[in-house]
Length: 193
Image (cartoon, rainbow, N blue to C red; front, side, top):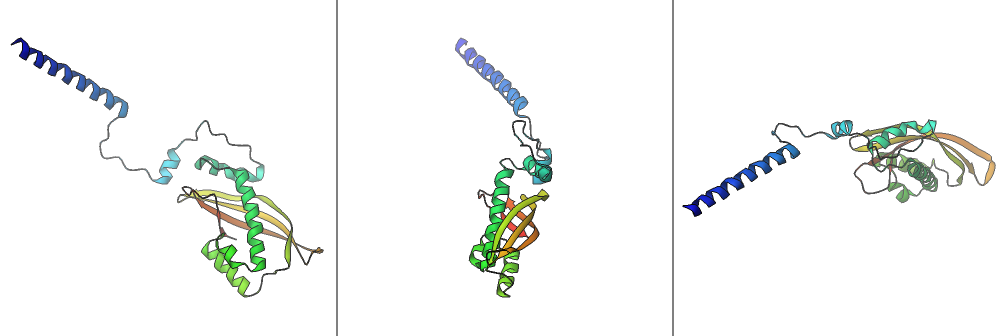
């Protein structure tokens, strides 16, 4: 009977260990009742705290609206974005003035492309126009919605025609760029002018 008592004792010891492990795991992992709702993207972002390690750089007065984007998007860099937006502005306006629809198509949304295409077909573009200067005057709006970031910038450009610096035309434009947060591409698309 001694041998049978040892087996019974072993079973009791393993059962106690199993109960102890289940108890500890439940305390560490918690329990799921099955009634929890999955958080929506907006709820998730509202509950998500800004990581303490995230270093948000000093923003100029006319860039303060970008703070919302820094809080919602982990790898956002406003300097890279603004440099890219400035280059995109020059590329898009130059392509428009030259009537290069193929170049425009990859840089703008379908609606904006349709507007540019119509203007090119109506010959309202000017192939002799060139940039004299371009600055980003400020951030008009910045928001995060439907898993997309939308930033509206105020551009002030000066352009001249036929290399004649006396014919400088100063223009102010509001352009809105958009990018999906989960997109691996660094490119932003112009969705509104």
